[in-house]
Length: 440
Ligand code: S3P
Image 1: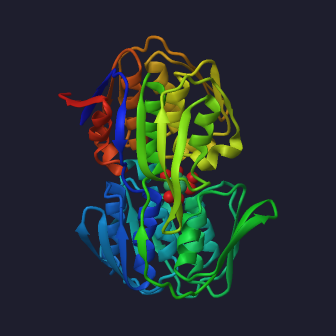
Image 2 (image 1 turned 60 degrees about the vertical axis):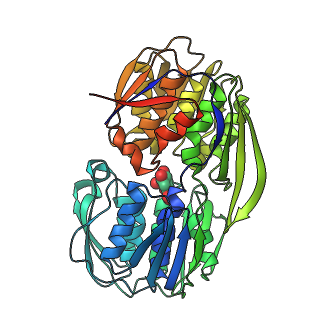
């Protein structure tokens, strides 16, 4: 599908964006590990999360859609999944496959896992290594890539795992495997990454503690808990809100409200950075919904200035750099985003893809080591067509750019947006953007 965005004026309106992808995956998986029926509301019904639901069905967890975003799942208990009789295809979902690997490590059967062309390129060794240290066996393609076979064990060893990167996917995979190990499993990461798994496990009755530890952020889990079924409420995804948010900050005279967005402190790096750049964003009605802090975001158009984004901020805005780079293209001066090495192993190489994409529109951009530099105050962008390369966030970032610059933007392979933000074009267009499907 080819989508084309043409320049628009002020954006105005009051919108909701879909449920948080991270929390949606975890709700389904943790519901599957509880004993009995859990309810989920606000579930993101994007392709990634639906792939997780299908995989759980194949493992014996009965899931049922009751209405838009309303689901129920019958959990089988922490060690109660059944051997799947076909390959589990997680599509584009890194979170889906990696967290599921952690769960499957504690089951005494072999599972075969694969995904789409993007997921098959991504590193899985970072997950296989700790799971093997706990006693699972992983046979993979070269470089630890999918497809892979994972044979689990019901008697996993509790370990202390030091992750070289701050990654919630690594941390969560080890903690989920730790559910099956007697005693205490510990993960130490260099900086705290998103903590949804910890919050949700604690609310289900597991003992999870975290705090500054030796050389980083340490999370400890007591194994073999019985998990209570839950009524999960999924807040709106701050990583999806990021697109209308940035568009509203930049399009002159805009005023947009985005409802019930997660403001988990480990997800708010983009808000912090945009505010440093001069963005007028107010958090209204801050509250806690089902264990996650949420607020309505009120955004008014603002003039932005360039900033230097420190590497420590990366875990709290890891998925937002492409859209931050778009914002930087309209800020006064050169923005330097530091320490973006992890962007190379996302759904696509987002460091190179962002730089090449921005350059195609006429934006001055450079990569220095793991830093991205974007020089802003674009007066005239060129029209360009970008291939999404199976990367939903790249697709949406360039469509936002096309609406803000002086020329349009086209994105080929834009169906990938369904991964995380079904209805993206409709939501943007309701605010005053113009994103339409065109014949290739
Ligand atoms: C996610 C963690 C992040 C993020 C991804 C979702 C999660 O990945 O990029 O989109 O749900 O745990 P890493 O943990 O690999 O940084």
